[in-house]
Length: 355
Image (cartoon, rainbow, N blue to C red; front, side, top):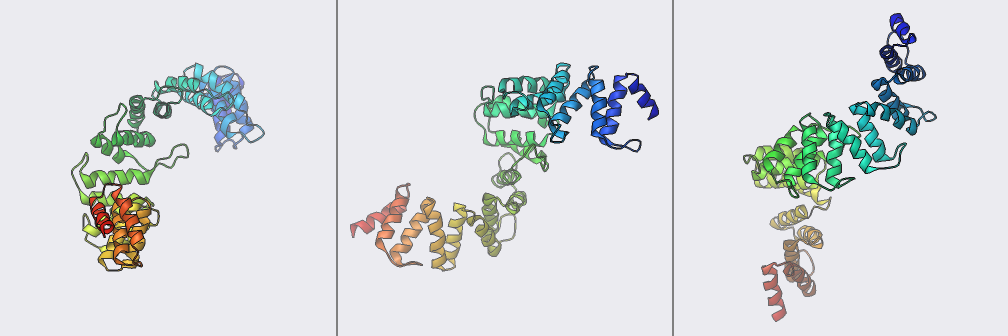
């Protein structure tokens, strides 16, 4: 340590930076001391040491206490390092232009610096470029370019990039072909993403994977794998997955048939407003001859525009199942269903109106 301090005091930039690191993180030789860390970083930075310049930028933007935080100083030091080719500083300078930290917001400048870093293989910059091409921020909206940059980062194991690339292939369109095989591949590569700077809808990821296995999209049809992924999403609260898992239990696909378990998951989804789950619950109660519950569930779905639920609700009002008989209500719900092309509803409506 004495040798390091001696070299730093003699003006050795690398030693000054290393001493700044010792003070910044603290070790067995020196206690953590931001003031000393910044002092030595600055000494090295003023000699052109890029890592010290980058560290000063980070300190002033993120790590300084409230009184010392200084975005303009952060930009100043980021720029010094960025102009010397430091990819991390280039990315941070780009994000300052994105967020308006120390400089006016400027999407073109942000992308300029992101591109500099991305071309050096910096994965966060590649993701930032992918995002900006996806949304058209500072560049023309271009899904193919978004996919290009997401892939660059995904191949470096960047989970957010893998997720977004999978989404592009899953839905397809606008320059990116729908490709379920590629979607499944990249979805399957995603680990849990808990970085505050990035967020993935992990439940949607799991649901989409489950759907691919259930329907055989890009993979061999496999109900057990479908159930595995549906369950992950369902337990995370995804309503579509809860309905899908309930359907698997109801039909005995990938799991032993268990209507009680099916109803549990249908109810979880229905309470979140999932129209298919509400309709499925209505059919279950109808089968069990609990018409009051069936009518209640069908009404929930019918009010969201489900044509079969509207038809069933019309039938209940016509016959007085679970509700008081009411031909006006029957006509009302038959009409709503018929307007959506339900021929059975139209036939029932014609029959009632002919009477």
